[in-house]
Length: 239
Image 1 (cartoon, rainbow, N blue to C red):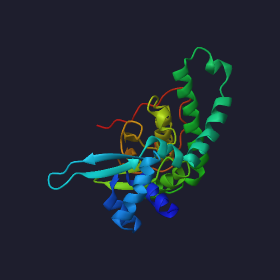
Image 2 (tube, helix red, strand yellow; image 1 turned 90 degrees about the vertical axis):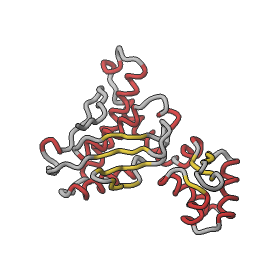
Image 3 (cartoon, rainbow, N blue to C red; image 1 turned 120 degrees about the vertical axis):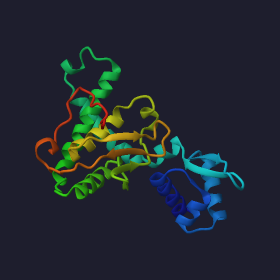
C-alpha cells in the first residue's frame, strides 16, 4: 500500500492534478484499486478533488495534492530551506535591519537564501553547451526541492516544480519565489520568467527561459553574479 501511495504522491508532485485512470495507468494497478487509495488519502486530508465536466459522458474527478499533502511530502525540502534561512538571518547586521519593516526584512533574508543557493551550486555548473547547462542547473536545484523537470515548449525551455515546502507562507509573500528565480537566473546567466506558482493556484511553479541566439558561458553578462543584497530582483520581461 505504501509503495502505491508513494507512487501516487510522486506523480502528482511532478505532473499535477490527474484522474484516477491516469494514475492507475502510471502506477500499474487497476482503476478500482487506485480509487480506494485515493479515497483514503482524501479522508486523511492529503488530496483535494475537483469534479471536471466533459462535453460527452459523465464528469470525472481530478485529484491533486492538498496544501497539507504538499507540505507533508516536502519535509526534506523544508529542512533544507530552514538550513539556509538561519544563516541568512544570522548574517544580518544592525545597520541592515534598522529602519526596515517586516516585509522588507523577509525580502532581505530570502535574497541571502537565493545568493547562498547560487553560490553553493555554481562550481558544479560548468557546461558550455546551453541545453547541458540548463540540465545541470535543474539537477543541482532538484537537491534544494526547487526544480523537478525540464521541458521544451516550442522555442522556450520550461523548468517545473510541482510541490511547495511552505505554500501557506508563499501565498502571502513572494520572497521565496523571487529567491528561487534569482538563483536560477544567476546560475544560468539569463533572464527567467516565473509564469506560474503553486501558491497562487497553479499546478506547478514554472520558470520559463528564452534561449539566447548566442550562448556565452561563464563570462561577461552570462557569468555567475551574486544577487544584489537587500533589493528585490524585478521579474524578467521580454520584448
